[in-house]
Amino acid sequence: MALAVILFFSLAQYAMGADNNSVWKIHDWSRPRPAVITPPTPSTPQQVGLAPSDAVVLFDGSGLSNWRAMDGGPAKWIVKDGYMESVKGAGYIRTLRGFGDCQLHIEFMTPTPPHGSSQGRGNSGVFLMGKYEVQVLDSYDNITYADGQCSAIYGQYPPQVNACRKPGEWQTYDIIFKAPRFDENGDLLQPARITVLQNGVLTQDNVEIKGPTAWCSRVPYSKHPQKLPLALQDHGNPVRYRNIWVRELPAKGAPDAYRKELIFGAKELQKYVGVYKRKGGGQITIKMKDNMLFASHPGGASGHPLYAESQNRFYSKFVDLEYEFTFTGDQVGSVKLNVAHAGWQEYKRVK
Ligand code: MG
Figure 1 (cartoon, rainbow, N blue to C red):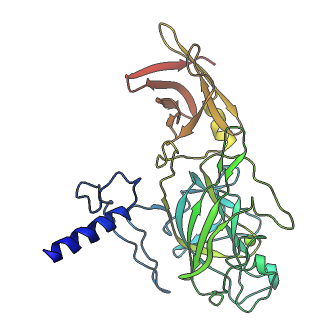
Figure 2 (figure 1 turned 180 degrees about the vertical axis):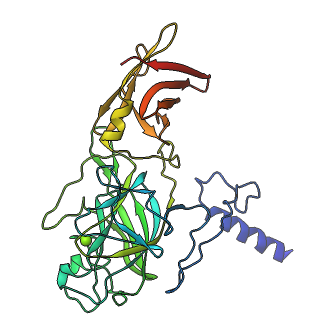
Figure 3 (figure 1 turned 90 degrees about the horizontal axis):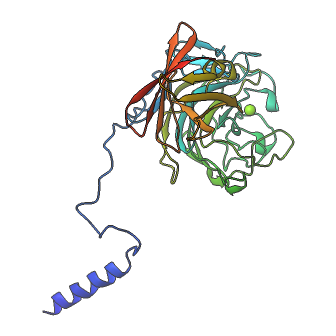
């Protein structure tokens, strides 16, 4: 009897300590279980590892199909023996796809024998959203300013420790990034946050990024899309990268958090710009603004941004509208529109 009473009180106390806001009971058998994935195979110095099964593989050594020059043109870095290498003067490269909140794995190697000193030795960089740099530098036996050494959030936070391997050895970054949030007026709601592990060692512990990283200046935040390409820096030194993968993280309140979002250059987007008409009435006008396509429908949704899932398929995030473009050679000839999954309607290009 006494035992039952004690047990009752301890269970009651335990229940009181539980999160009252949770919709789930403690040990709720009906609570959905997380997806089962295959974890990554880590790289060894000789052998490149494998991405986890739910990751987007950005580079597996086979080519630069997921990468572009910053203007959307072809990426001109070298691909050789399972790695890519930055080429002096070729410029930064960026992913075709945009990412917001994510977990990123990337491996890098600074040149051996080392050349130059301070910021001139093995300099490159991993730019989340093309704006927020985790510095890549040969900081093995190479002194520079603390907030510019390897694993620094450039110009903002030195790493907690210098965990660099020697030049010519493969190193890893595991990065957890939370994108900044802006309201409709462009005011900052929440700054970006970042956690970095270099070679398995914590170097940045959920720090608040103060704005886009820059040399010798503090740049304030300015509103940008929820997803933007990841970029790698050409700083004139032949730095190598391999085994790059990213896992998108669920962003609260972000529509289509996991839906693929490709970022084309202005030249490519120009192909879709025009007026499209349907037999028996109806018109879609596609325009370009700030390197994005906008579709407007007379008497319907006006000027909403279009997001690319592929070369043919675009979608709206805010209205249930799907667009399927058809190419004739290099020209867009028509677009099919599906409103609220009611069925596809074809519009021929007239302008
Ligand atoms: Mg750099």
